[in-house]
Length: 192
Figure 1: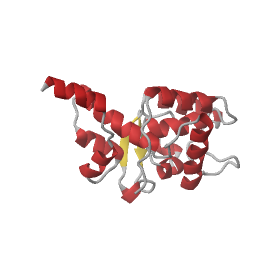
Figure 2: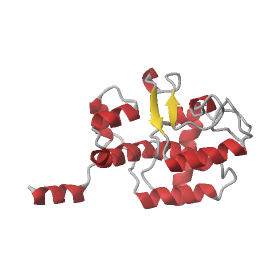
Figure 3: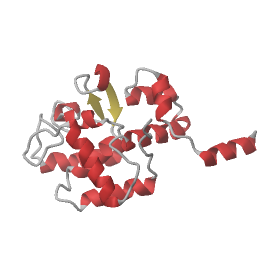
């Protein structure tokens, strides 16, 4: 059985972001990373995301992403609030692309839509370039879900909220994404 994608710590995410900002597509590449780590999107959802899913009718950025059923796994549409870092990166990309009202958010070198397979390979190259082993295009999603699970109590929410953000039909699926924390387990045992 293959190992699940590695969950990254904050320093590793910063390393990946720093690496993407110094590249040829400095406006696009951080958005790809942030869509994974700060919105929990799958590779197919990143590839399928259109500007209409992140813009208001007046063509300004909305406060959330509407992940349409047409791009979501199993057709499970959902709404994901925009993290401030992702909002900032999307603003830069929107300006860089000439403020489009529609069309793909993530463009290939040739100006067309990237495929999900291309996104998967893009993540593989980035992780290899920065020396992070055990990572895949799913690392951002697993990190998003695990981090959300560790922080949800501070927001007054529950695992059901994370399930909805992830677009999972079953809470059991969401639970499989969450990586345990040995330090937290030790602290918990000491509290009992």
